[in-house]
Image (cartoon, rainbow, N blue to C red; front, top):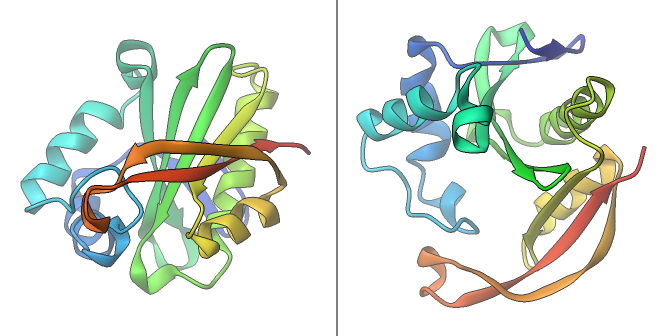
Length: 175
């Protein structure tokens, strides 16, 4: 376990996580709405991504690492946290599987990640961003202790929103 609270643990993936992560998040059309990628086509695509990005050397070798959000009570992979190097800071992004939404897991995982990165000296600051229309992500970021710092126009391309370039709100962790 990388770090944990009473309800959630953040850890590297285990092969048994892949089918549920694919079914409830990476392969779900609705979950990809505000992402810069299409939903994964199959479990093998999710497995390949996790093998490459969810291990102790991923951050050093790829500049990005994916941690599984484990719902301890359910002994289940509830979602993913992505940590990416951004100069002396780290950028964090998140996704929660459909059955685990609306329980505060996103905000708790974001706060847990940010606190861990700062406490271990892995980052001087922690930031994030989300699509200007993604109210659920905006709410989770604020509940986690992130503060809105601005708007970036035409920041990313959203394949599921007609491929148009989308504005995002930028956030900085403040606690």
